[in-house]
Length: 126
Ligand SMILES: [Zn+2]
Ligand SMILES: [Zn+2]
Image 1 (tube, rainbow, N blue to C red):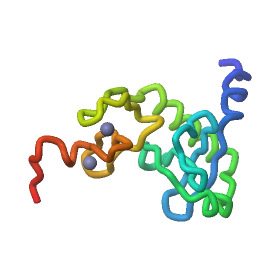
Image 2 (tube, rainbow, N blue to C red; image 1 turned 90 degrees about the horizontal axis):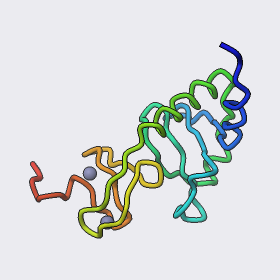
Image 3 (tube, rainbow, N blue to C red; image 1 turned 30 degrees about the horizontal axis):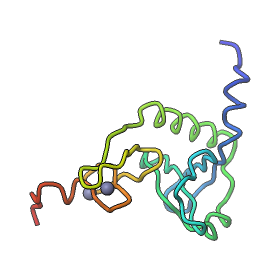
Image 4 (tube, helix red, strand yellow; image 1 turned 90 degrees about the vertical axis):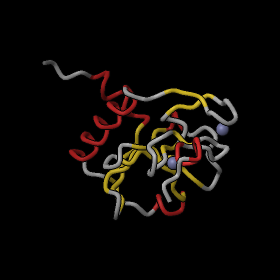
């Protein structure tokens, strides 16, 4: 297969770092909507989800090596291609897995209004 230059170009939006506990993380400049000024939205490769981090902290992370960066970008592209879309059952806002975080407990997309599967239907087991 020929080396596809288009793939490389697409990745110029992406910055990869190595996080001390979470491993590879990706910043996609295109998906920073609705993120508070002191935070940045990163894709956590090992967890296959978006999460927000303090900008101050991210500045101190190590740049990922080229091989790691490639792995990270592939994982991220896969994540994007499988991104889910739905709407909030409380406030009816449109939700997706790129611009919103996924709850680590119930794996539902968590809305700005804090609604997620944990609070749905009141069937909490605790
Ligand atoms: Zn909502
Ligand atoms: Zn939840």
